[in-house]
Length: 115
Length: 112
Image (cartoon, rainbow over the protein chains, first blue to last red):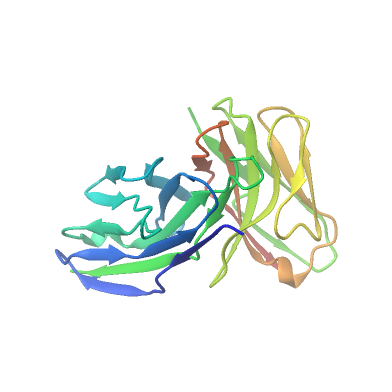
């Protein structure tokens, strides 16, 4: 079945460091891909998305490119800030049964950025 | 717009008690979802409602029931709470496509 695998955390970085959080997926067809962020004590919110191969999603300095050849959607940011400390979730829209309303979730990667 | 709202924010129950978690959205979305979040387990889907009048089981439905009261509201009921149901519960909603979901702030439930 469809699945998402994220790199395990926690990830700890110093402010202004480069961030990569790996995400790979297994899916039938052409799912949409998402990164969600969860700040401490809050619900999840959409960070960025890509709906077809080679699309690049971007928001708040974060980027991710939908790579069909490597089935990946890695999250990157050139210079992290303390305020980026959060848990990041990779997800794909499951379409196997023709219903693209459910999301398949990775387990989340915790990021801590130190000043 | 308030987006997705959930009540209560916190709740402590004793084993065997029942309660209903409330969720409402004001975005006119068709689909609504209930998840639980546990350390190391990520998000697990309990139930979802693809449209008003329909509900379906997710990955972990045992011990829960849901009601899609109308297009705005989707409630989750625990009939007889167990310590294994201690978790953070999130409600979410989405339009038909492309599955982008909007989350509420969560309910932190402890069952003793």
